[in-house]
Structure formats: C-alpha cells, structure tokens
Length: 512
Image (tube, rainbow, N blue to C red; front, side, top):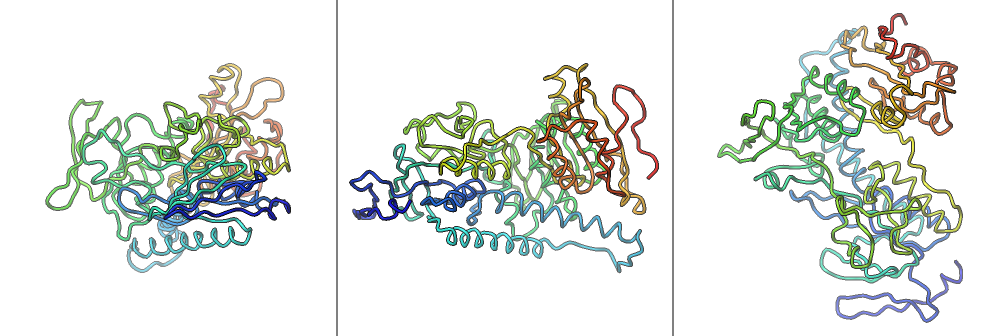
C-alpha cells in the first residue's frame, strides 16, 4: 500500500474533461471505486479503506419524477427504512394515546396529528444522517464524489457532475451498488403525471390527505398503515395477493388487522387511469376483476407501490460486458458477488437473486471489501436472513415460509407448531389480539431442525432478531423448548409452543 501511495498520477485537463490515467508502472488511481453511496456501497468503501486500500465512492441522486432529491446514504436512509420506521412510530404513538386512557392517563380533548411537524422532524434527522455519512467517509479517507458513475472498461469509471463535468477514474476493482428506484405503471394514463412513489412521500411538506396506495407489497402496506395511524384516509388497491413472497397465512393476519384498524382495501382491482379534476382532486378509475365492473373514486394523492427497477440502465454495463438478467435488468453475480467481467463486482439490490434488504447489502459489502483486500475468503451467507414488515400489527420472519417448506420437503415431512396469544399490553387496553400469532415450521423427523419462524405482534422485528441467531447455529425445536423465556413478554411464547397444526387442537394460549 505504501508503494501504491507513493505512485504519481498525471491529471490531464482537456476542456471540461478531467482524466486521471495510470502511470507508467501500471498502477491505478484507486484500489476500489464504488459506484453508489447507499448502505452496501458505503459499507464496502469504509471497510476497504480501513483495511488500507485507496477508495473512492461516486454517488448522485437523480431527482424523482416529482423532483424529490436527497443526500448521501441511499434508499434506506433517505426514502426507506429510516423515515418509514419514524412515521410508523408516529402512528404507534397515536394508538398508544388511545390505550393510555384505559391505563388511567387523563388526556384532555381529542388528539390530532400535524403532518408538517412530523415531516420536518423526520427530514431533519435524515439530513443529519446524510451529513454523518459524509463525515465518516472523510474520517476514513474515502474520496467522495457527488457524481453519476458509469463504466468505460473493466478498470475505468467515468464520473459526471450535474453540470456535465466529467472525471475519469481508474481502479483495480470496481463495485456497483446503485440499488433500485420505484416503478410507475407506464400503461396507466396519468399514473406518472399525477402520482407519487415512496421516493416522494417522506419528503412531502404537507399531508397527502386521502390516499390511494396501489400495490400490496410491504412498502404499500407500511405506507398505508402509518397514514391510517396518523388519521389519514388510506385505501390499498390489491391486484391479487398481499405480501407476495411472504408466508400467506401471516399476510392474511396482517391485512386482517389493518382492515380492523381502519385501512380500506380494494381487492382484485387494477387501475385503469388517473385524471385530475378541476377541483384538484384525483379521480382514479379501476377494474374490479371479481365483478368485472369499472369503478372509480377521488383521492388527494395516489401512491404507486408496484415494484422497483434496478438502477442499471445508465451504467454502460452491457457495453463493458457485464451480464444482466433479461427479465429484471439486474446484474448477474456469482456467490462472491463477481460479475461476468473480471474485477467488477455488484452488491445489494442491483444484484440478481439477492434479498432487497439493507443489512444484507451492508454485510455483503463488508465481506467483499475484506476479500478484495486479501484479508478474508468468507462469502456472504444469504440463507436465513430475517426481516420485518412495519405494518400496524408488525410481522417478522426468518427462514422458509410454510409454503416453501412444503414445496421443498413435502407436507408430510414438516411439522408446524403454532399459537394465538394475547400480548399483556393489549389486555387492559382491551385491544383485539385475534391476529397475534406465532408459527414455527420445522422438520418432523430426526432433530426437528427449525425451517422457518413467523411472528405477528408488538416489537416483531426485535423478537425475531434474537431468534435469527439460532438459525445460523442449526437450532431445533428441542433447542427452542429448552430456552427459558423472559416473563411476561410476547417473545417467550415462542419457547412454549406445543400445539401442532396437524393435531387440529385449539392453539389459543390461555393463562399467563
């Protein structure tokens, strides 16, 4: 590394094009150049720098269709996990205020929510994180360039500023970590012109008002959930099923609770067009596939949550030879995150077949950096990745769904232990707990190894995070029963499961 740092690099300036070239000894400007400053890219760059490598990060946020733009940190920090969880917390506090009166708190008058106050606080926190990421890069001596990056060849990246100024960087290794952005349904007239996406909702200055959320992915359910929780009128339009890819019994519990909570659902419906009325309201027309009828209603906002597209189009990947999946447009990667071009790697949501989750991108980025530095050979383990859906009744899981377990091992080869339980917090508040449920899927024979664990209830993500460790260690049903629970908690119910679905017995927990 010392020899590398002593190497002199020439800088040519030709008009507005600045070109860093390799010196006569064949050295590169950087050991690692990362394109994309989201969770994965930042983790990879900082880890590589800590291991003594010379690193640069290029990150530029193309404004959304509505003009929304944000700072360094990627989707999670700016328009994903962080603002979503904070707005979810705002909704939980609204529910807590209702519960508080049953617990003896005297709350004068009806409570009301102010969107502007919440939005400003959330946005200020996000901006502090943007600044924090810049400071961290500087402290770790990672060069940060606010530029759009694209590939020139297997060792060269072109950076371009918003004003068109170009810079050429050479690198021994290139890491693509550009993630993805929400999609609009281009076949629906007015969708892009009048709608917003998750790239916009967290940065609105004013309340979205009566909102139609199109799409029942976790993004759609979470957004509609916190909108309902803060007092907005929210409707979710569902084409077929909710939470595709998740355990469908659990998805039914989540949506069932949401309907009781006040969120409306338009099931088996597909949007046809969006029109802006003279009043400023948005009239949405859709087809109900159950009745075969055309229906419509007016809304203040239409939020599209119909999937995400990888940010791969402007990277010049195919010209360089990087293989893309023809259906998804994502980069095809090997187990070591390598692409089809030597020295070019991809991590996070841009990679085909990888979980679109911040923690996996971070872990994959760190491990890749260690391999590139020659410090380790460890590969990312994408099995048993836990996740949570922050809907009004939270849902978290790790491992296989019941459907996946049946498909992989056969219905007769798995056992499902389950329980309906009532959180102690719900008792005095007299809240409905009929959707609070636990399910553990395991093998029937031998040591009854755990295959999947699913939980709906308060603090679901916190509960499953701990149990996820057991999956990494090959935990069994016996291990689960031998674990002493913490009383009185919701999580302890996992250590007491004894009723199987196969038995047909009532799985309702009684007693404390």
